[in-house]
Length: 265
Image (cartoon, rainbow, N blue to C red):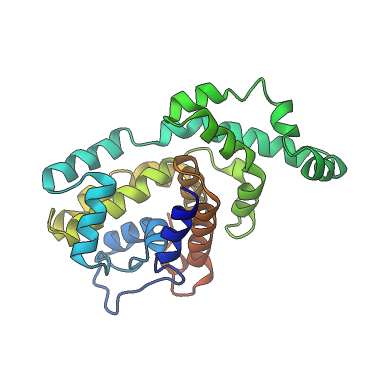
């Protein structure tokens, strides 16, 4: 992470949303493309078409390197894993711990919060030490204890990012299925682009977690917030936090965004 992480994010073409000139989508495809938008915005993919707008060479290399997907068989195996397992349950305990921290911080008197931020940033983590088992969180997520400590130590900053640009209270997010659902829809789009599946199969694969998403969230803002939260649990850095929050915020500020004219429900 560190410098290389910052360089990687700086090289991404994600200063604005990208749109296909002509979008030929059925209503179901449009909804699933909108579902993939948090990752599409981050990667600089089209946010209004099944096609991603990426070159086949770059896409093939990226999907193979990040996902180990190189053909139809490996795509189907990965898609099945996301639907059946993914990361949502592994990250649940850490997320609940973060929400407890945030709730304790927000409910404290303003003076205490101000003093804590200036003199003792770890005050609320210390107060809740009996409820925040870093070793258990590390075991659940596959992260190191040091990674968990870094994530917890940064909670106040990025929890505020969920509130301000995205307009979501962290306590509203009780399920992180958005993280898996967005990735499934995105991976299915990439598989179409690479010829691993036919266009007619896209909705069948991409909709594998559509039901749980509709059950878990009331609007697209909550979907984006849950995606950002899980994305930072998956791999936290300041550069990644900035990129995730900024690109998801564009989905609410750009009048052309699929979030603007397509309801979640």
